[in-house]
Image (cartoon, rainbow, N blue to C red; front, side):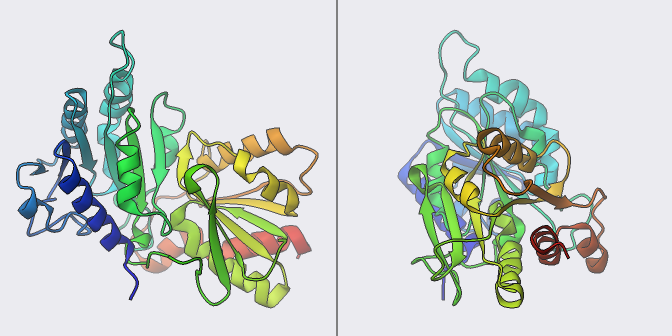
Length: 337
């Protein structure tokens, strides 16, 4: 059986802490026997009791302590139990951690990561289900990444801890139970390949097709829904769709996507957060600037509905973007039906 994403994340944290005595992990209930709300930190406090630390319910303090550790030359990983709570650490990230790398007259390495489980689909309701990525776009010195089922979590965290600037890892909770993909196959119909600098982009496409009618661009948590829509388009409408999953959300360089976008009949950007000032808007804006005249359609942006996220599963499903929404949007744009 393939390793699940949460197991890969846990193994990656074990590897990082074993390899580097400067790596710390701190957050609410990260220690055993609880091991974190999603068990990402299971076993770590037993193995590294001096560097895996439970904290009070105080996100501002968690991020502030992590920034202080980074300022002192350590490499901390701060866990938000749920990504919604990162708003309480916003000041420490934007006004302290990111600025500390540059405001002391010389570059100061601030190697720290804030991990944020985000997203809905688990009926956790208004305060435990949001995607807040857009609120951190454009902060100087801050880098944003999102978990994918294609990239090893330990390698990713190790990379983030070597950047010299703070970074946030958004982890869509629906990914935790999904398998890591290896060997180039997603399933019986779709294959994948990494491309771009360091393999930071993943292209998922139907096996055996050299060209595609549609290019979907979506973060890792949207993969399953985009893939479901792509299968329906392929089987029912003979529309060939490919999906590109980026590892880094911001800063975002669209150069590796230009050829794929220009060759596709339609480009769609899908994200689970609400519309307005979003990563999807940033991607669409950059593609327009580079490919105006080469695109045959407008860049379609899809987001969840402008709503508080309900607890009831059937109501939550109506609010959050679904595979059916992606399928309908593409079919309407391509076939005008």
